[in-house]
Length: 178
Image 1 (tube, rainbow, N blue to C red):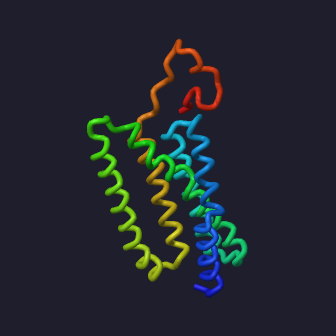
Image 2: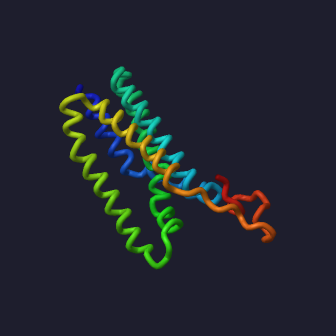
Image 3: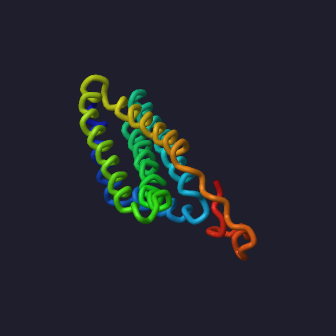
């Protein structure tokens, strides 16, 4: 891997942790949460993350140059924080009954830690054998698995109640669209 690409990733990490792309990518889903179901927002977040990770891998494979790779990588950072981190805390509270909610939230968080550990464990092997672009390809496939799991295992929201004043006016927050 050329040193220029590695320096781009270091710079991109500094920029994203400074909060430029990251802060905005969490504000938009929080605003959308008022009018879009958590299920749809999470699926959209996984789908956008998969697309941007795939584009990053392609930019690296085709060696588009440091500036293009940097821009695509910032897009990947933005979309990796879009939707999914917001719904991570909302969906368990919508799904689990109140009397087991704390335990189920803990089990959900533990499953997330196992996934993070697995990725951290396997990434060096992918990098050594195939290169950095394949890390992004692998991450895109995992994000697509997130879309499939979201659509298969998270039920759609119930319809809004009929006859209650203010529920079907079309304003943001008055009804949830699936």
